[in-house]
Image 1 (cartoon, rainbow, N blue to C red):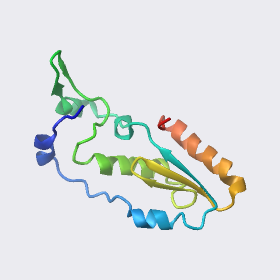
Image 2: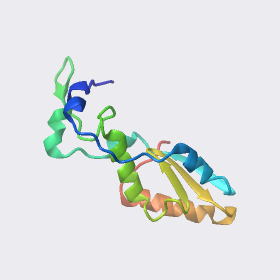
Image 3: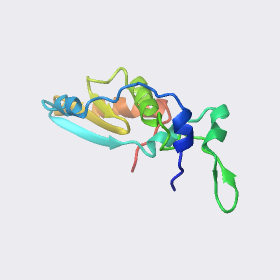
Image 4: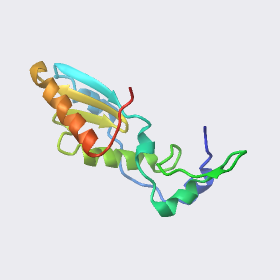
Length: 135
């Protein structure tokens, strides 16, 4: 399903929070022995909308009107908001044993023996913040 947020995006101020340069993320994994690639499940939808903003995401169906309680894809600042959340959740791991670009995560380990520890730390952070991965 696709909802057109053109009107709300026009009146919404832009969020200048930067997305990390992909080439730097790739370079940051170059000398690591083991990598695990993880994808967040419906990433944007895992961020709850504030109550006062839910009605701004309203859309109609032939049966009734609905609004999103989780952040929908298509909002102007969705990418920046999600990246900010990911940076906060993994602030203690970023650059050390994880790289993240929006909803894509790379768990990286220099020596393969400790990769399970790095994955455990990542999964604990995901659980602590009630975030889910794609199966």
